[in-house]
Structures are given as structure tokens and as C-alpha cells.
Length: 245
Image 1: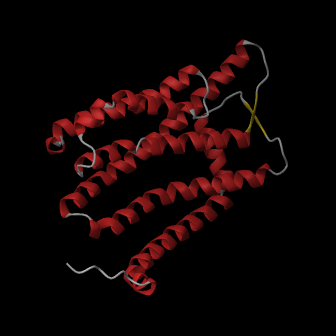
Image 2 (image 1 turned 120 degrees about the vertical axis):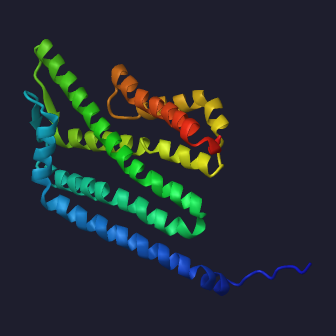
Image 3 (image 1 turned 90 degrees about the vertical axis):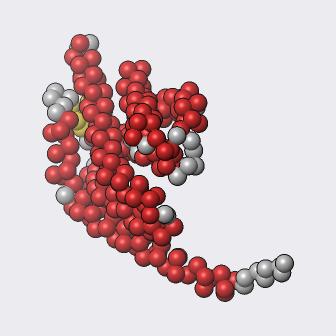
């Protein structure tokens, strides 16, 4: 058996250049959409912030500015938020199209079947995080009235915490997709997931603990849907995709 002659640097470049060129093209496209949507979010930040505050329905909570530069901070936060919301689904789609040649027909169909579910889960997780922050602010307002204490919320901190919590919950709600694909591609078996339940629950608890709401009830409410999604994903894969077990 002859020893393989190692490829030269130039040969490696020529071999992988089409692949790298394709990656660069797709990343530039996603980046351009991110910039465009971010610019829209930057210039329309006032309407976006007013819309968010109306959704929160904060009532008697005093929302204040604590710095003359917060207008710029709010515009930047609005820009990043709109950019992420628009480009995350696009990035997922571009990644799937890029991976298509490396996947079998059955694997690619499985991925594309789960794509709409992934988008719905992201929206659901984002909305759940938003509602959790609304709950925290409502509790804050209620307690301030009960104790006859004035209340003030920094607008920048409030919106940044809403964005962080909602975005991370949107991403956390993607793990059923990851679990299903790992089982479908036979990378991790159904039995391994079921046997590692305590670890999965602990990861869900630790993830919820790093979210901005710091009270015990918020921790439980953030952990519970992750655990339910884990169990529901196992149940669906057991019932409808018996081949992965």
C-alpha cells in the first residue's frame, strides 16, 4: 500500500476554496440583511420602544431616563433587537441550504420538516420570556403599592433585560429540535436521553438561574417549560419516530 503524499498548502487552498467562498457569500448575505434591518430598527427606535411599553402595560410604574445618552443606547438596543429577530431565521435557513450536499435525502427532509417547528418554538420562547419580564415588573409594582414605596425603572436596563431574557428563552426552546436531530441522525440514542434525565433537569435549572428574574417563583416558571419540552420531545419521538429508538 502506497503512502499518501500530503497535499501542499496551495493544493489545500484550491481544494477548499469553493467551500470557503460559499461560506463567505452566505455570511455576507446574512450580514447585509442584519445591517439593513438594524438600520431600520435604529431610525424607528421610538416607535419600537413605545410599542414594547404598550405591550408591557405597566400602568403606574414610573419609567425614567437616568442619562442624557440613553436615547442613543435605546436606538442601538432597538437596532440589535430588530437585526437579531430578522436574521436568526435567515441564518438557520442558510445553514441548512449549505449543509444540504452533506446530508442524505432522508436526513435533509427531516431537517426541513423541523424548520417551521424551529421558528415557531423560537417565537414561543421569545414570547414566554417577554411575558416573564412583564410578570416580574407587575410584581415589582404591586409590592411597591402594598409597601407604600415609590417605584422607578431605568428604561435602558428594563429593555436590555427584556431582550436578554426573551432572546435566550427563544434559543432555549430550540433544544427539542436539536434532540430530535441527534436521535434521527443516530448520534445520541433515545435511551441515553432518558437515562440522563437528572442531568437535563439540572441544566434547565442552571440555565434559568442565569436569567435576569432572580426570585424563586421566576426560577421555577423558567425551568418548568424547559423540562416539559424535554419530556414532550421524548414522548413525540417515541410515538411518531420509532426508528430513532
